[in-house]
Amino acid sequence: MTKLNDDPRVDPRIKAILGQVPVPAQTDVADRDALLAEAHSPDGLAVREMADSLMDTLDNEQLAPAEGLAIRTVEFESKPDGNTVKLLVMRPEGDERLPGLYYIHGGGMQSMSTFNGMYRTWGRLLAHQGVVVAMVDFRNALYASSAPEVEPFPAGLNDCVSGLRHVVGHADEFGIDAVRVVVAGESGGGNLALATGMQLVRDGDIALISGIWALCPYIAGEWPQDRFASSIENNGLLLDLHNNRGKHVYGIDAFDEGNPLAWPSFATEADVREFPPTVISVNECDPLRDEGIDFYRLLLRAGVAARCRQAMGTIHGTEIFTASCPDISAECASSIAHFARTT
Image: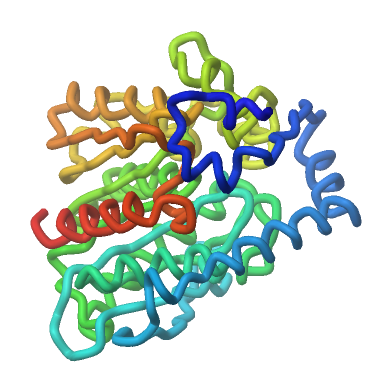
């Protein structure tokens, strides 16, 4: 039995889908170049293609139909590099001005795409809650998204901040109420959502957004850590994080410098004091659980109107993996949209 299948805390529906899938141990790498060479070898590319194909099978029209939604792809120029990035924009049909939800996909800032079937479903599910969803397909650090460039920090963050500015600047075109724009994301997207908030604070532009919602944020950069018990007890439940791959592929220099824009666990109270209302959502059986809770407590110390919620019985990113627990996914989508409407 796998560790997941043997864990009494995990929802049986998750076990039924993933309980027999082994989580391979990940070894350390010498540097970013070695990781890129491994990832882009024939075997590495085959694994990535298989993962992308699996995510495309998760495009669920029953849970989140395209009917009733206006869906389009928009391109913008990202600053300061001048590269082109795409947004997948979904909204209920009609001309009503609605709250905006700027969503950043997961994948450890390394992989996956807004245009994968799993994210198309998640975006439609969110849009059906009465918000305009703009999902940014930023430059990944390991595998290309629809943006062909593969670049480390700060490329992905620059794209996310530029995309947000584009969405707010074209709020009328998208039918968005520009005073209600929430930034959200899961895992690596949770990292980028929090980092986007911190970059806006530094730029004096935090008023562009009304809230932040980070699901299972991937923000520590190094695991295990004794201060985060979940990084030890939950490792091997979907994720194996006991290696140095994440910080090497996204930016070892930024980690060594303790840069909170790359790894928000390094943030201080001063970095987040101007944040708008923020929700941190964690999963009980996720190795990342405690770093998310720790960031929530930082927000409270800084005087931010923050909340933290924990989905019991779930593993990392269960809400986005709508095939396993559709009721949990639907409840989370509804809660995010309510947050966008009321902040």
